[in-house]
Length: 323
Picture 1 (cartoon, rainbow, N blue to C red):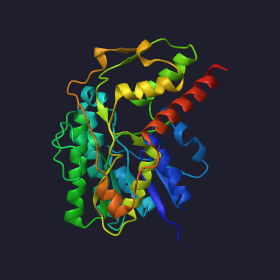
Picture 2 (spheres, rainbow, N blue to C red; picture 1 turned 30 degrees about the vertical axis):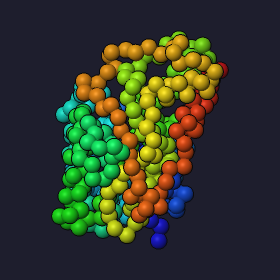
Picture 3 (cartoon, rainbow, N blue to C red; picture 1 turned 90 degrees about the vertical axis):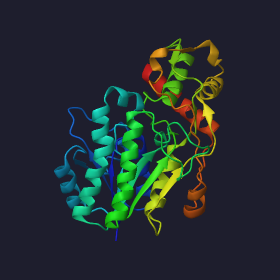
């Protein structure tokens, strides 16, 4: 029997990589999309003839229930969220509705329709915030520093609660920063690589960034979606940190990206206070020992290869734009 997977947030970076991976595993893939006046299917355009899209909304409980009833998925991956940290400071209530209560609506739909559905919840390293220990593990206390981080903590613990209260097979992946050429341009990594391409090709002179000293554990999104699938195919539902165990600064990311095209980052990067967060997360670094031991998961793409991959993709894209 062909397994069916339902992905919320399928048009995002992780949704696109996960859909492609699931097709390779022989799944029938369904995606939830919000009704919009304009389509944003760029990341999954190459999959449009295979993926089945359905309209529903994390703010509308009935639409999620109907979607689960219609698709009858074996696996449900809840990736949808308001996931841009700076926006969460500007729109904290909307962030809470999508990123916190939206998780409850998904879990409640599964509890109501079919408790045998296995659920993956996208938790985040932003939950750790002001870190209490380093590296961070599954037992490190949370201290979120943004409305997004707070909402993700709620989503994480409500997933644990439904697992323990209703015997749902519900897992949370505490994913540290994961990037790719499909990352949105509003995120600092893609902002850097896009600017590097434009500066190299003479279309831009300066790149304005916020905190250059912020340290993050950056991995490749394609590696991380494989971990999501492994969690739902394990015998026992549990929560896992997914990370590389290495941390690098924004400054180092920019340095490698500019070096790749033969430029000096200091000639082009300026610090702009507008991009500083009201409450900063200074450092994040994950320990994925549990995922390695229990799931057999390990990252395959190195930090340097990730940066170079993103720069090359943006160079190719920008060249096509100006042809």
